[in-house]
Image 1 (cartoon, rainbow, N blue to C red):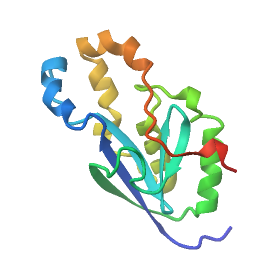
Image 2 (image 1 turned 120 degrees about the horizontal axis):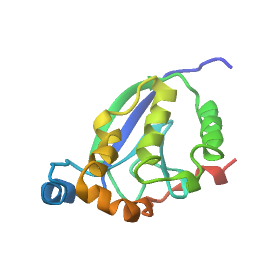
Image 3 (image 1 turned 135 degrees about the vertical axis):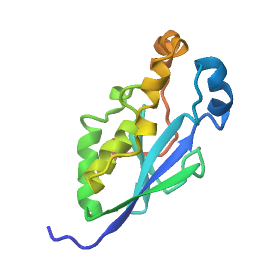
Image 4 (image 1 turned 90 degrees about the horizontal axis):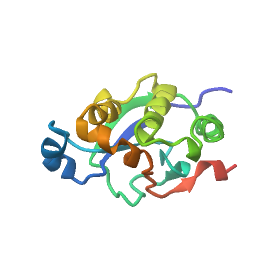
Length: 164
């Protein structure tokens, strides 16, 4: 298939703690965290993300989280929308099914990094992907791990695996 253009790829970053991580992390974890990050990839006019329901999409800033706290320009891709949708469908049926979601080890940020790599050859910033290990390395994180592993994030959108 012939490439028909170049498409911008953006990383939307949300602090799902709404600033609470920055305030409470020194007391609770003994180290400063700037946020608890949820990320999504915006390409071809849609926002794509992963949660307990699997891969979802919506219009940019269309989740219950509203506008992102920050946006990182990841560059551009030559991957047309049709090929990208096939790629997402295959991920939704395998690696990124909802039942594979894990808050610390296989989450929205893992998804965003894999999709960014596919589209642009670049991963998302390590301060986002390294956060779970940072939290789990604290005594508080270790104590909370069983509870936190059962928590699922689902900002709302259109489930990819349900679309053909």
